[in-house]
Image (cartoon, rainbow over all chains, first blue to last red; front, side):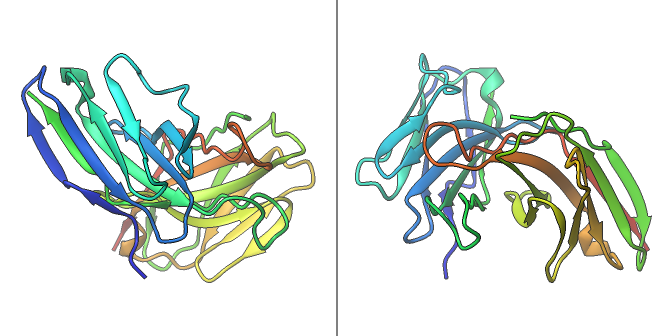
Amino acid sequence: EAGVVQSPRYKIIEKKQPVAFWCNPISGHNTLYWYLQNLGQGPELLIRYENEEAVDDSQLPKDRFSAERLKGVDSTLKIQPAELGDSAVYLCASSTSGTGERGWAYNEQFFGPGTRLTVL
Amino acid sequence: LAKTTQPISMDSYEGQEVNITCSHNNIATNDYITWYQQFPSQGPRFIIQGYKTKVTNEVASLFIPADRKSSTLSLPRVSLSDTAVYYCLVARRGYGGSQGNLIFGKGTKLSVKP
């Protein structure tokens, strides 16, 4: 079974330029997450989708970041314009939702390899 | 969600058992404990999850005392390939809103030496 697919794997841009990242989750996973990971830190949630609805975007810097998941499958995260401080790894993850085998909300998330963004 | 505290780094040798302890003093009744592993240039990978007592799978064991204020991830007979960052997380049962969101800390960087 294919895992979470992200592209591109690496991106180098100059500041003030726009950039977009794409994610295709595991088939059948209706929950999709975008995370940001700085060097030496754990991932930080940016936005979570349940199907096509963004149910938690409280950590997304909405002045320059946007995301969409129009058909409830793949998703795009955009930054416009990019700043030097946006250099980081952007991770996408997916999971099933609802009650899992063990009787509670089973939140095993499957992560993609990430996109490493460098802003010059 | 309860904040977790774990050692920044640990060193071990091949073949040894490694125990990484995590404290989560403010864990709530609806919270469960989960551990993720992350290799360089990869996304985190789920290892194990538990609510109380002991959970074991093919990769690791998770020990949770009765008060649930801490947990210990046990990796039996580590190899060089177990060198990674290990994250202890507390996530809340439920569905909707922010329930189920994972809050990652800095994790424990485990270095396994030959």
